[in-house]
Amino acid sequence: MANQTNNGSDDDQRQQEEQQQQDNNEQPERKRPGKKPLIILGIVVVIAIVVALFFWLTTRNIESTDDAFTEADAVTIAPKASGYVTELRVKDNQRVKKGDLLVVIDPRDNTAQRDQAQAQLGLAIAQLHQAQASLELSKVQYPAQKDQALAQQAKAQANYLNAQEDYKRQRGVDPRATSQRNIDAASAQLRSAQAELASAKAQVEVASQIQLQIRQQETNVEARQQQVEQAQAQLNTANLNLSYTEVRAPYDGFVTKRNVQVGTLVQAGSSLFSLVSPEVWVTANFKESQLERMKPGDKVDISVDAWPDMKLEGHVDSVQMGSGSRFSTFPAENATGNYVKIVQRVPVKIVIDKGLDPNKPLPLGLSVEPKVTVE
Image (cartoon, rainbow, N blue to C red):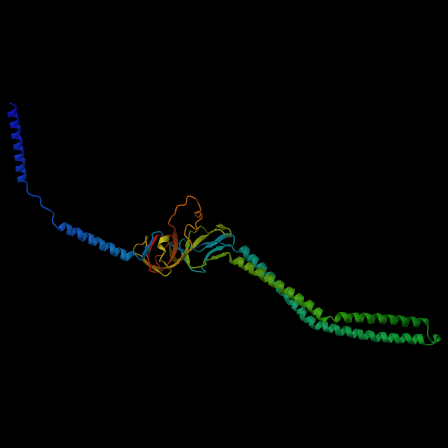
Protein backbone atom coordinates (compact mmCIF):
# COMPACT_ATOMS: atom_id res chain seq x y z
CA MET A 1 0.00 0.00 0.00
CA ALA A 2 2.82 2.34 0.84
CA ASN A 3 4.49 1.72 -2.51
CA GLN A 4 1.29 2.47 -4.36
CA THR A 5 0.90 5.75 -2.45
CA ASN A 6 4.45 6.83 -3.29
CA ASN A 7 4.03 5.93 -6.96
CA GLY A 8 0.88 8.03 -7.08
CA SER A 9 2.67 11.06 -5.58
CA ASP A 10 5.54 10.80 -8.06
CA ASP A 11 3.12 10.66 -10.96
CA ASP A 12 1.36 13.77 -9.74
CA GLN A 13 4.66 15.61 -9.36
CA ARG A 14 5.75 14.64 -12.87
CA GLN A 15 2.46 15.82 -14.25
CA GLN A 16 2.88 19.19 -12.55
CA GLU A 17 6.41 19.58 -13.91
CA GLU A 18 5.28 18.68 -17.41
CA GLN A 19 2.39 21.15 -17.15
CA GLN A 20 4.74 23.92 -15.95
CA GLN A 21 7.20 23.21 -18.73
CA GLN A 22 4.37 23.29 -21.23
CA ASP A 23 3.22 26.65 -19.86
CA ASN A 24 6.74 28.01 -20.10
CA ASN A 25 6.97 26.91 -23.69
CA GLU A 26 3.69 28.60 -24.46
CA GLN A 27 4.91 32.06 -23.05
CA PRO A 28 6.49 34.36 -25.71
CA GLU A 29 10.14 35.25 -25.36
CA ARG A 30 10.91 38.68 -23.56
CA LYS A 31 12.39 41.29 -25.87
CA ARG A 32 15.64 42.99 -24.87
CA PRO A 33 15.63 46.79 -24.69
CA GLY A 34 17.03 48.50 -27.76
CA LYS A 35 19.56 51.40 -28.06
CA LYS A 36 16.96 54.18 -28.66
CA PRO A 37 16.33 55.01 -24.96
CA LEU A 38 20.05 55.26 -24.35
CA ILE A 39 20.39 57.66 -27.27
CA ILE A 40 17.55 59.84 -25.93
CA LEU A 41 19.09 59.84 -22.48
CA GLY A 42 22.45 60.85 -23.91
CA ILE A 43 20.87 63.70 -25.87
CA VAL A 44 19.11 64.95 -22.72
CA VAL A 45 22.37 64.86 -20.77
CA VAL A 46 24.22 66.74 -23.52
CA ILE A 47 21.49 69.40 -23.71
CA ALA A 48 21.59 69.83 -19.93
CA ILE A 49 25.36 70.24 -20.02
CA VAL A 50 25.13 72.78 -22.84
CA VAL A 51 22.42 74.75 -21.03
CA ALA A 52 24.40 74.72 -17.79
CA LEU A 53 27.55 75.79 -19.61
CA PHE A 54 25.70 78.58 -21.42
CA PHE A 55 24.14 79.78 -18.15
CA TRP A 56 27.50 79.78 -16.43
CA LEU A 57 29.17 81.64 -19.29
CA THR A 58 26.45 84.29 -19.40
CA THR A 59 26.16 84.78 -15.63
CA ARG A 60 29.69 84.32 -14.36
CA ASN A 61 30.30 88.08 -14.78
CA ILE A 62 26.94 89.07 -13.30
CA GLU A 63 26.46 89.96 -9.64
CA SER A 64 22.88 90.53 -8.51
CA THR A 65 20.90 90.88 -5.31
CA ASP A 66 17.29 91.30 -4.31
CA ASP A 67 18.29 93.33 -1.23
CA ALA A 68 18.15 96.67 -3.07
CA PHE A 69 15.91 99.71 -2.78
CA THR A 70 15.44 103.13 -4.32
CA GLU A 71 16.87 106.11 -2.44
CA ALA A 72 16.91 109.90 -2.81
CA ASP A 73 17.62 113.05 -0.84
CA ALA A 74 14.79 113.66 1.62
CA VAL A 75 14.81 116.54 4.08
CA THR A 76 12.36 117.62 6.75
CA ILE A 77 11.07 121.13 6.13
CA ALA A 78 10.83 123.05 9.42
CA PRO A 79 10.31 126.80 10.02
CA LYS A 80 12.73 129.04 11.90
CA ALA A 81 9.90 131.28 13.08
CA SER A 82 6.94 130.59 15.35
CA GLY A 83 3.37 131.66 14.71
CA TYR A 84 0.11 130.79 13.01
CA VAL A 85 0.12 129.54 9.42
CA THR A 86 -1.74 132.08 7.28
CA GLU A 87 -1.10 130.57 3.84
CA LEU A 88 -0.49 127.02 2.64
CA ARG A 89 0.49 126.90 -1.02
CA VAL A 90 1.21 123.20 -1.53
CA LYS A 91 -0.78 119.98 -1.62
CA ASP A 92 0.13 116.41 -0.81
CA ASN A 93 2.75 114.90 -3.17
CA GLN A 94 2.92 118.12 -5.20
CA ARG A 95 6.07 118.75 -7.20
CA VAL A 96 7.75 122.08 -6.41
CA LYS A 97 10.79 123.94 -7.70
CA LYS A 98 13.65 125.50 -5.83
CA GLY A 99 12.63 128.82 -4.26
CA ASP A 100 8.86 128.21 -4.49
CA LEU A 101 6.87 129.65 -1.58
CA LEU A 102 5.39 126.76 0.39
CA VAL A 103 4.07 128.13 3.69
CA VAL A 104 3.52 131.65 5.09
CA ILE A 105 3.56 132.29 8.86
CA ASP A 106 1.88 135.39 10.36
CA PRO A 107 4.53 138.12 9.78
CA ARG A 108 3.03 141.03 11.78
CA ASP A 109 5.31 140.74 14.83
CA ASN A 110 8.41 140.45 12.67
CA THR A 111 7.25 143.36 10.49
CA ALA A 112 6.94 145.60 13.57
CA GLN A 113 10.44 144.66 14.67
CA ARG A 114 11.74 145.41 11.19
CA ASP A 115 10.11 148.86 11.18
CA GLN A 116 11.55 149.66 14.61
CA ALA A 117 15.05 148.61 13.51
CA GLN A 118 14.69 150.70 10.37
CA ALA A 119 13.79 153.78 12.45
CA GLN A 120 16.81 153.21 14.69
CA LEU A 121 19.00 153.04 11.61
CA GLY A 122 17.59 156.34 10.33
CA LEU A 123 18.29 158.03 13.67
CA ALA A 124 21.86 156.67 13.74
CA ILE A 125 22.47 157.92 10.20
CA ALA A 126 21.21 161.41 11.12
CA GLN A 127 23.53 161.53 14.15
CA LEU A 128 26.41 160.43 11.95
CA HIS A 129 25.73 163.24 9.50
CA GLN A 130 25.64 165.71 12.39
CA ALA A 131 28.99 164.43 13.67
CA GLN A 132 30.51 164.65 10.21
CA ALA A 133 29.32 168.26 9.87
CA SER A 134 30.82 169.10 13.26
CA LEU A 135 34.11 167.59 12.13
CA GLU A 136 34.22 169.70 9.00
CA LEU A 137 33.33 172.79 11.02
CA SER A 138 36.04 172.06 13.57
CA LYS A 139 38.69 171.97 10.85
CA VAL A 140 37.89 175.67 10.21
CA GLN A 141 36.79 176.75 13.67
CA TYR A 142 39.74 175.57 15.76
CA PRO A 143 42.45 177.28 13.65
CA ALA A 144 40.37 180.47 13.74
CA GLN A 145 40.06 180.20 17.52
CA LYS A 146 43.85 179.90 17.75
CA ASP A 147 44.30 183.05 15.66
CA GLN A 148 41.77 184.81 17.86
CA ALA A 149 43.59 183.69 20.98
CA LEU A 150 46.88 184.94 19.57
CA ALA A 151 45.27 188.30 18.83
CA GLN A 152 43.90 188.49 22.35
CA GLN A 153 47.36 187.65 23.65
CA ALA A 154 48.90 190.43 21.57
CA LYS A 155 46.32 192.89 22.84
CA ALA A 156 46.89 191.78 26.41
CA GLN A 157 50.64 192.15 25.89
CA ALA A 158 50.17 195.69 24.62
CA ASN A 159 47.90 196.60 27.53
CA TYR A 160 50.41 195.13 29.93
CA LEU A 161 53.27 197.18 28.44
CA ASN A 162 51.15 200.34 28.53
CA ALA A 163 50.14 199.72 32.13
CA GLN A 164 53.77 199.05 33.00
CA GLU A 165 54.87 202.38 31.48
CA ASP A 166 52.09 204.27 33.30
CA TYR A 167 53.15 202.67 36.52
CA LYS A 168 56.78 203.65 35.93
CA ARG A 169 55.80 207.23 35.19
CA GLN A 170 53.70 207.46 38.31
CA ARG A 171 56.55 206.08 40.38
CA GLY A 172 59.19 208.20 38.68
CA VAL A 173 57.65 211.68 38.93
CA ASP A 174 57.92 214.10 41.86
CA PRO A 175 55.51 213.03 44.57
CA ARG A 176 54.18 216.59 44.61
CA ALA A 177 53.22 216.29 40.91
CA THR A 178 50.96 213.27 41.45
CA SER A 179 48.81 211.72 44.08
CA GLN A 180 48.76 208.43 45.90
CA ARG A 181 45.48 207.65 44.22
CA ASN A 182 47.04 207.86 40.77
CA ILE A 183 49.89 205.64 41.87
CA ASP A 184 47.47 203.02 43.25
CA ALA A 185 45.39 203.15 40.06
CA ALA A 186 48.48 202.65 37.90
CA SER A 187 49.55 199.73 40.09
CA ALA A 188 46.10 198.11 39.87
CA GLN A 189 46.00 198.62 36.12
CA LEU A 190 49.39 196.93 35.82
CA ARG A 191 48.28 193.92 37.80
CA SER A 192 45.06 193.67 35.77
CA ALA A 193 46.98 193.86 32.52
CA GLN A 194 49.38 191.23 33.80
CA ALA A 195 46.47 188.91 34.66
CA GLU A 196 44.84 189.47 31.28
CA LEU A 197 48.13 188.63 29.58
CA ALA A 198 48.41 185.35 31.54
CA SER A 199 44.82 184.47 30.65
CA ALA A 200 45.46 185.23 26.99
CA LYS A 201 48.53 182.98 27.00
CA ALA A 202 46.48 180.18 28.53
CA GLN A 203 43.84 180.62 25.84
CA VAL A 204 46.58 180.38 23.22
CA GLU A 205 47.81 177.13 24.78
CA VAL A 206 44.29 175.64 24.60
CA ALA A 207 43.62 176.91 21.12
CA SER A 208 46.96 175.59 19.90
CA GLN A 209 45.79 171.94 20.42
CA ILE A 210 44.09 171.92 17.04
CA GLN A 211 44.96 168.31 16.14
CA LEU A 212 43.64 166.97 19.44
CA GLN A 213 40.41 168.92 19.08
CA ILE A 214 39.94 167.68 15.51
CA ARG A 215 40.79 164.14 16.62
CA GLN A 216 38.07 164.39 19.25
CA GLN A 217 35.55 165.20 16.55
CA GLU A 218 36.87 162.35 14.41
CA THR A 219 36.35 159.85 17.24
CA ASN A 220 32.81 161.17 17.59
CA VAL A 221 32.27 160.44 13.90
CA GLU A 222 33.72 156.96 14.33
CA ALA A 223 31.40 156.29 17.25
CA ARG A 224 28.43 157.40 15.18
CA GLN A 225 29.57 155.14 12.36
CA GLN A 226 29.65 152.19 14.75
CA GLN A 227 26.14 153.06 15.86
CA VAL A 228 25.03 153.08 12.23
CA GLU A 229 26.61 149.67 11.67
CA GLN A 230 24.96 148.32 14.80
CA ALA A 231 21.59 149.66 13.69
CA GLN A 232 22.17 148.18 10.24
CA ALA A 233 22.96 144.80 11.79
CA GLN A 234 19.77 144.98 13.85
CA LEU A 235 17.82 145.81 10.68
CA ASN A 236 19.44 142.89 8.85
CA THR A 237 18.49 140.59 11.72
CA ALA A 238 14.93 141.91 11.66
CA ASN A 239 14.72 141.40 7.89
CA LEU A 240 16.14 137.89 8.29
CA ASN A 241 13.58 137.04 10.97
CA LEU A 242 10.87 138.44 8.71
CA SER A 243 12.08 136.24 5.84
CA TYR A 244 11.78 133.20 8.11
CA THR A 245 7.99 133.66 8.02
CA GLU A 246 8.11 132.49 4.41
CA VAL A 247 9.10 128.84 4.05
CA ARG A 248 10.55 128.14 0.60
CA ALA A 249 11.73 124.98 -1.15
CA PRO A 250 15.50 124.43 -0.84
CA TYR A 251 15.57 122.38 -4.06
CA ASP A 252 13.29 120.74 -6.64
CA GLY A 253 11.29 117.87 -5.22
CA PHE A 254 8.00 116.38 -4.07
CA VAL A 255 6.09 117.39 -0.95
CA THR A 256 5.55 114.31 1.22
CA LYS A 257 4.06 113.59 4.65
CA ARG A 258 2.42 117.00 5.03
CA ASN A 259 1.14 117.58 8.56
CA VAL A 260 0.30 121.30 8.54
CA GLN A 261 -2.89 123.20 7.77
CA VAL A 262 -3.91 126.86 7.58
CA GLY A 263 -4.31 128.14 11.13
CA THR A 264 -1.88 125.67 12.68
CA LEU A 265 0.33 127.14 15.39
CA VAL A 266 3.84 126.04 14.50
CA GLN A 267 6.98 126.35 16.56
CA ALA A 268 10.48 126.96 15.29
CA GLY A 269 12.01 123.63 14.35
CA SER A 270 8.73 121.71 14.18
CA SER A 271 8.22 119.42 11.19
CA LEU A 272 5.86 120.68 8.48
CA PHE A 273 6.47 118.07 5.76
CA SER A 274 9.25 116.28 3.92
CA LEU A 275 10.72 117.20 0.56
CA VAL A 276 11.95 114.33 -1.62
CA SER A 277 14.38 114.99 -4.45
CA PRO A 278 13.46 113.62 -7.91
CA GLU A 279 17.06 112.46 -8.40
CA VAL A 280 16.71 108.82 -7.39
CA TRP A 281 19.46 106.26 -7.04
CA VAL A 282 19.63 102.64 -5.87
CA THR A 283 21.22 101.34 -2.69
CA ALA A 284 22.03 97.66 -3.19
CA ASN A 285 23.27 95.57 -0.27
CA PHE A 286 25.62 93.02 -1.84
CA LYS A 287 27.27 90.21 0.06
CA GLU A 288 30.90 90.82 0.85
CA SER A 289 31.80 87.83 -1.33
CA GLN A 290 30.29 89.62 -4.36
CA LEU A 291 32.55 92.67 -4.15
CA GLU A 292 35.79 91.05 -5.32
CA ARG A 293 35.59 92.33 -8.91
CA MET A 294 33.03 95.10 -8.46
CA LYS A 295 34.28 98.65 -8.93
CA PRO A 296 32.86 102.12 -9.69
CA GLY A 297 31.77 102.53 -13.29
CA ASP A 298 30.51 98.95 -13.80
CA LYS A 299 27.36 98.77 -15.89
CA VAL A 300 24.14 97.85 -14.07
CA ASP A 301 20.79 96.64 -15.39
CA ILE A 302 17.93 97.37 -12.99
CA SER A 303 14.44 95.92 -12.84
CA VAL A 304 11.72 97.40 -10.64
CA ASP A 305 9.27 95.12 -8.87
CA ALA A 306 6.49 97.73 -9.00
CA TRP A 307 6.81 98.18 -12.76
CA PRO A 308 8.18 95.01 -14.38
CA ASP A 309 8.13 96.63 -17.83
CA MET A 310 10.46 99.43 -16.71
CA LYS A 311 14.05 98.59 -17.50
CA LEU A 312 16.66 100.93 -16.09
CA GLU A 313 20.34 101.25 -16.84
CA GLY A 314 22.96 102.70 -14.56
CA HIS A 315 26.44 102.31 -13.18
CA VAL A 316 28.11 101.65 -9.86
CA ASP A 317 28.89 104.99 -8.26
CA SER A 318 30.65 103.97 -5.04
CA VAL A 319 30.95 101.30 -2.39
CA GLN A 320 30.29 102.28 1.20
CA MET A 321 33.34 102.15 3.45
CA GLY A 322 31.70 99.85 5.96
CA SER A 323 29.11 97.13 6.17
CA GLY A 324 25.53 97.81 7.05
CA SER A 325 25.87 96.26 10.49
CA ARG A 326 28.88 98.47 11.27
CA PHE A 327 26.78 101.63 10.99
CA SER A 328 23.63 100.24 12.57
CA THR A 329 22.20 101.65 15.79
CA PHE A 330 23.59 98.71 17.75
CA PRO A 331 26.76 97.47 16.01
CA ALA A 332 27.69 93.84 16.53
CA GLU A 333 30.27 93.16 19.24
CA ASN A 334 32.42 90.53 17.59
CA ALA A 335 35.00 90.39 20.38
CA THR A 336 33.02 87.81 22.31
CA GLY A 337 33.55 84.15 23.11
CA ASN A 338 30.47 82.94 21.22
CA TYR A 339 31.31 84.59 17.89
CA VAL A 340 29.56 83.15 14.83
CA LYS A 341 30.75 84.25 11.42
CA ILE A 342 27.97 85.78 9.30
CA VAL A 343 28.35 86.94 5.73
CA GLN A 344 28.10 90.72 5.86
CA ARG A 345 26.35 92.95 3.34
CA VAL A 346 27.87 96.19 2.08
CA PRO A 347 25.73 98.99 0.60
CA VAL A 348 26.63 99.95 -2.96
CA LYS A 349 25.34 103.17 -4.51
CA ILE A 350 24.08 102.76 -8.08
CA VAL A 351 23.30 105.83 -10.17
CA ILE A 352 20.51 105.51 -12.75
CA ASP A 353 21.63 106.75 -16.17
CA LYS A 354 18.56 106.19 -18.34
CA GLY A 355 15.19 104.52 -18.45
CA LEU A 356 13.34 106.76 -16.00
CA ASP A 357 9.90 108.01 -17.00
CA PRO A 358 9.29 111.67 -15.99
CA ASN A 359 5.59 110.90 -15.68
CA LYS A 360 6.27 107.94 -13.43
CA PRO A 361 8.74 108.99 -10.69
CA LEU A 362 10.16 106.30 -8.45
CA PRO A 363 9.06 106.58 -4.83
CA LEU A 364 11.62 105.88 -2.13
CA GLY A 365 11.97 102.38 -0.77
CA LEU A 366 10.80 100.46 -3.86
CA SER A 367 12.29 96.99 -4.23
CA VAL A 368 14.55 96.61 -7.25
CA GLU A 369 16.92 93.98 -8.54
CA PRO A 370 20.22 95.25 -9.94
CA LYS A 371 22.51 93.11 -12.07
CA VAL A 372 26.07 94.38 -12.14
CA THR A 373 28.32 93.37 -15.02
CA VAL A 374 31.79 92.92 -13.58
CA GLU A 375 35.04 92.22 -15.38
